[in-house]
Image (cartoon, rainbow, N blue to C red; front, side, top):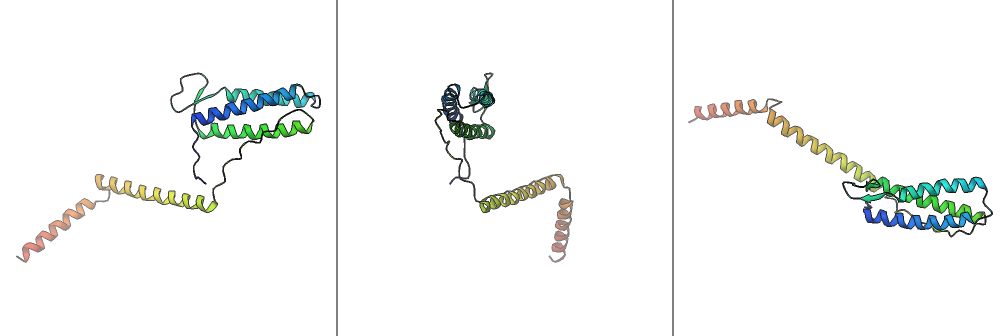
Length: 168
């Protein structure tokens, strides 16, 4: 089990190719299906158009240069998984209408992270953030002498020298 799932542009592109291939096969079954009514076919056509639009997006690491290019983000991966699940639901629905459609169950999403691990990560982040903030405040206050500590240190050094001179 991993705590982090990293999607590369290649992963997204491969997923898009598979999604489009599965959706195209399903579309062929829908066009020849006599058991689906006109409303269902229209809803399918809208979904299929959305899938084709999504699959036309080209994921890149940085600096998109083309009109269809976009930076690979978690949102892009989430959309891919959502379309896969929705396509699976459509395939089951159409198969129930006696349409000749292959059902392709997408790979289930990764196993959910244990809530205790999430809680530990959250508290670890809070503690790390608090320590970082304290460090920054300490550095800034020392540099800018916000709390007068430098003058207190200088006066205590002078007092120490005076006491030492007295006992020599």
